[in-house]
Structures are given as structure tokens and as C-alpha cells.
Length: 212
Image 1: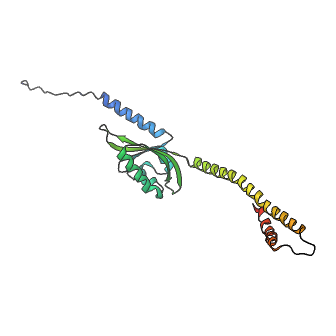
Image 2 (image 1 turned 180 degrees about the vertical axis):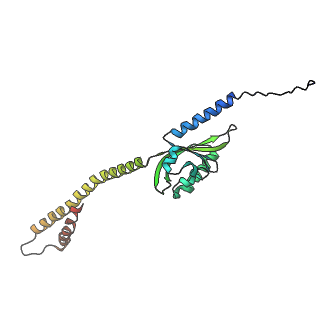
Image 3 (image 1 turned 120 degrees about the vertical axis):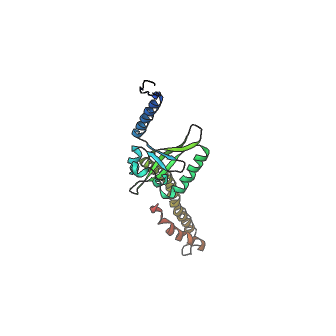
């Protein structure tokens, strides 16, 4: 100005929407961090970018140890190639994958997890990340295995009993036929030769039956 007074320009920008969005993301992150299910977010290359507290507790790896590492770090070795293939198909097709995975903890022990892997898209619809939600079902899987074994044993029991019954009947039938042959043999005569194997067979078959 001519009188030498200073001037200033003030720019005002409404950041209400941005602050609200930031607060919403913060609340979402806090909620995800407190859920009981283990949550992992990785990019399309399979590099871990986020893990919640439940996943850290379940695997034994802290956030600092997990972030930046490949997802296959958490997988049982025999599943690594298979899972990588599943993730590649997931990324290419944009489908949700559900199944069971055998994971490896930091101490090397294994556990089974019911897992859902979903793609994450950007505003343009391109898949940029995937999110994995897991639940430890090791105990449930062990119970299922024991139940299946018990059901098999229940099914085998009647079958084994029937086989033992039929097996025990064999020497009885042999003895009956041999007895009839003896009745038709003259005193002092010889038992017909074709009956001798039956008498020997009776001795062979009678012994194993109690073991069934």
C-alpha cells in the first residue's frame, strides 16, 4: 500500500470432511485391533502391511516382526506353494477364498485356522490388497478327528462281531460233518480220506477266533 502498511493473504480451507474421515479410519483400526479373530492385510505381492493384536497373539510374531514380511512366513512349509497359487488366483479373479490352513507359530509349533481371504479394491475397482481373517480351530479339528475315529470303530465293531460269529461256525460245521462220517464208518474201519482235512481244518480254525 502507499502508506507502507503490511498486507497478508489468508486462505481458509474446510477440512471437516477430511478430519471426519481420519477419525473414522482411526475408529475402524481400533475396532479391528480389538476383535477376537486374527486379521492380516497384505498387498498383492503377499507382503504383510498390517496385523491386529489377535494375530500377533496367535502366531507369536509381534507387529514389528510381521510387517514387511511375506505371508508365507506364517504358513506350514508344505502349504506355501499351494497357498501362493490360491492367492494368485484370488488376485486375478477377485474372488473370496475360504478354507482351512495349517499355520506355523514363531516357536515352530503348528495350528489349524479357519480362514477367509478377501480382495480389497481401490476406488477404480483394481485389487490392491487382500485381507485375511483367521480363527484357531486346532481343538475343534482334533475333536472332529477323534469323533470320526470313534464312528469308524463303531462301524467296524458289528462287522468284526459278525465275522467272528461266522468264523466260529466253521469248525462247528466241520465237526458235524466229520461226526456224521464217523457214524457211517464201520467199526475198525478208516475214516474216508476226504474227511481228514476237515478234522485238521477244525484245529486250525478254532484257535484264531477268540482273538477277534
